[in-house]
Each structure stands twice: as structure tokens, then as C-alpha cells.
Image 1: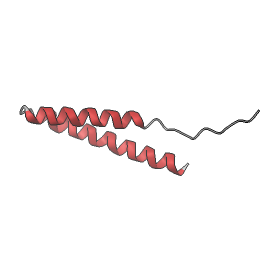
Image 2 (image 1 turned 45 degrees about the horizontal axis):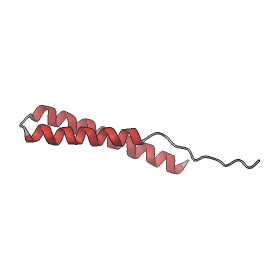
Image 3 (image 1 turned 90 degrees about the vertical axis):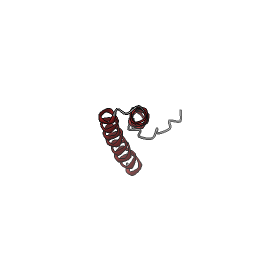
Image 4 (image 1 turned 180 degrees about the vertical axis):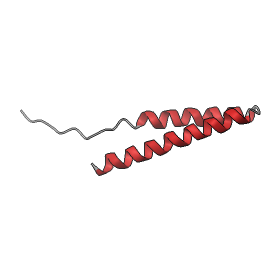
Length: 62
């Protein structure tokens, strides 16, 4: 029986999904004038994108 090695996957796709969700929320909040919510949403989206990039680089190196 021939076994194939599966590539290491870190599950970083969830971070990118949530980053897009928070980015869209920030755009909508900015459009209706809720600056505080828009700012917080953009910060959360930025953090999720950074985590996704770090996990993607680690996955590529391993």
C-alpha cells in the first residue's frame, strides 16, 4: 500500500475570512458615520491579516 504525505496546514484560512468580515464591517460603519466601530473593526482586521501572513510564512517554511 502506498501512503502519501499530506502537507502541513496551519488553519490560517479562518484568520483571512474574519479579517475580510471585519474589514467589510469597518467600511459599512464608516459609511453610516460610526467612527469608533469603524476604527476598532479595522484594527481587528489588521491583526487578523498579520496573524494570517505569519502563519502562511511558517507553513511555507516547514
